[in-house]
Length: 370
Image (tube, rainbow, N blue to C red; front, side, top):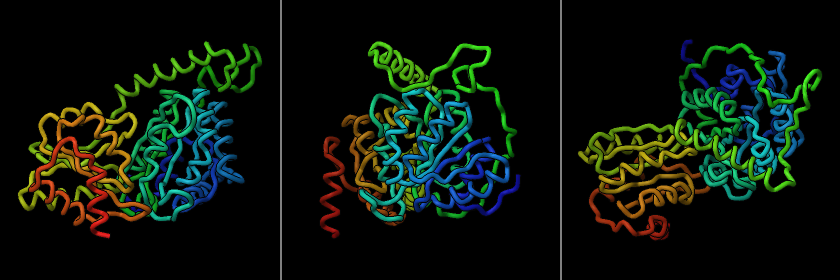
């Protein structure tokens, strides 16, 4: 299909529709409300279920119910709304059901503001809700990638009976870019053998997340873990830029990764051998790839739109084998390419110890600027 100028939120909504979503439940919250608005128009046109719930708590439990019936179902929200959904998300995970959730992140903590942020990394990547479960988390850096990942997320959710998050910051939701939508898939109704759609002429099926018998609960956790091991092997996604001879590697996801790419190009123009490693799957995280990089690069620079959440994962993987520096902007402030470029210049000319805490160093520099 031809490329057209598309806004991120509406593009993600239409991508879900074309991927065969049958039911959407949500509640307005900036900066993702345009997604809900698009769904409110398109889903009834197609004879599919749309409902604006009275709250995020209601919306996620409607998702839970629809997922039990085998419908392709999703919701979307922004940071505080996702926080309210966490109990229902854990119930969905405990019942081993597929569902897609789009989180268009905004500044926080608390109600914060409506500006773009990446402060939900820990909340989403590490589950958020109680118990042991592992959501798949995909982070786009532009409208086209957001479209592609939303379409993919439904297939992954069903393949692994898993929750899949598309983790986009407010920039991705609000920006407009040329992009191409996928063709409309026909709705398919080959229901899995665990869904509940009436028990006439067969044994009852029970979907639940409560197991008072602790041994049964342990078996559920084992099943979830076994599926997750397959995800870890098969679903790692990332992009590399200028990495063939890179001595200094910038790591960033989403908008931070996009901004960092411009900075890396500027560094290359000045003869600095910089490269960008952009994780797309934040869970499963590309640990093996970063582990290999740590064996030969001179230094890492992690760029995030938060106080340094992903950098803690990078430190765990690198394990003092290479220096790590951090640059972050918080509360909805988006870094400019020249800021990241200055950081690349700095790490290319200064020597750092591999055991220095990058967030402590960043805080010292931040205090001196402010």
